[in-house]
Image 1 (cartoon, rainbow, N blue to C red):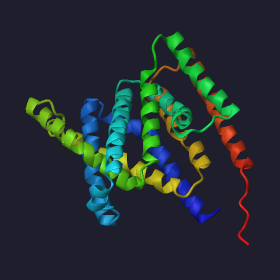
Image 2: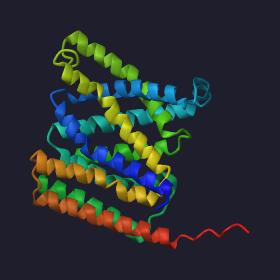
Image 3: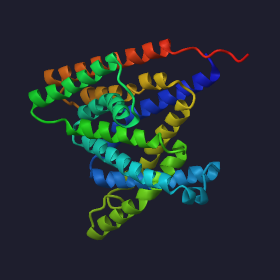
Length: 300
């Protein structure tokens, strides 16, 4: 195996496994309200990103940011999107709805296809149309059988889909991008902390040192998988990353059912089955497209 490919595979596998088991971390701090957890995630991620960018000397510099205001404006929007995604995910985990969160990340690749059609002018191939149709049927089935729209799944899929759509248009690497995003929303998180402290409702500093340490660790839980993912994505084909991304929701589903006692009934089984079938068609189409791509001729 090519050494670059092998390192990329290790990085990407580590990222998706860490994202898959992340719910176990949030279960440890489920006594803390989701909005306070997200504030900690933003603040400590910002602190960690400052340290990483300074020590690695990879920060693009304030002058570059001043000269690219549209990049900063786009990152402000992506920061709000990823914060919404984080808040919804933490709420899902701490309210016993991890299966809905897993479903959201299974739907996400198909949402990405729709966004590419709507905003990038791409055209769907027949198998992609069938895959999206199956995902729609899966969601519709749950609405009919369970009686409610799986809003957690849809918010997670749509917010992360738009996040990826906008981030791919920003000429900035993942570390600097995350650093700017967290820096832009960190003041809002700090203001929220001040409000909690003034009301006497903040968990941080009032419960135990172990809880404080776990909340500070939110920065590591956020940034390490993203850094590993960025390193893996730079070394692997996009199709390989596409296959590996299903590791995270699969691990989350196992945790939800096997360790946290969530019910996986017939209605959910049919919903997940339709989504999995759609993903199988989607992956098969990607494989066929890759095989059909012309092989570049060597230079003369």
